[in-house]
Image (cartoon, rainbow, N blue to C red; front, side):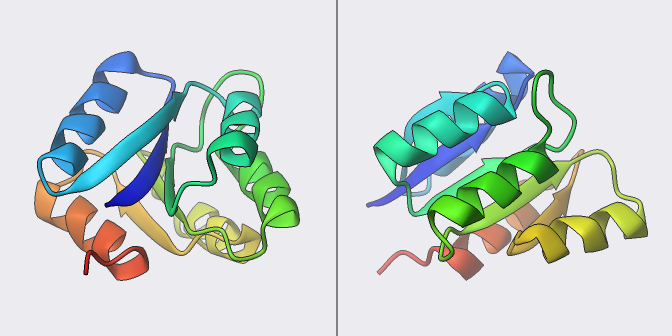
Length: 121
């Protein structure tokens, strides 16, 4: 089972993403509500994929991507954000995000993005 870290400051969205992933054979091994927690959890859990929001308190998702990529250049990170400006999407991809899913998201789009970076055998 592929391991996932969900980074989102809204608890109900974290729970929704967790339910979707776990019902499709992914294991959510950790949750974080900001970029600082995301880095700490990434280091200790080493998930196969990270789903991360951009706007969060403390440290935003773009800064967290940069730090996680310094720890592990092969980290697979998917941005899940309501901020869908083209410049932000490009900035996220430049920082090292593998995919970008816009909120509100369709379940199929979220799963498609996750499967593209962490396919289930």
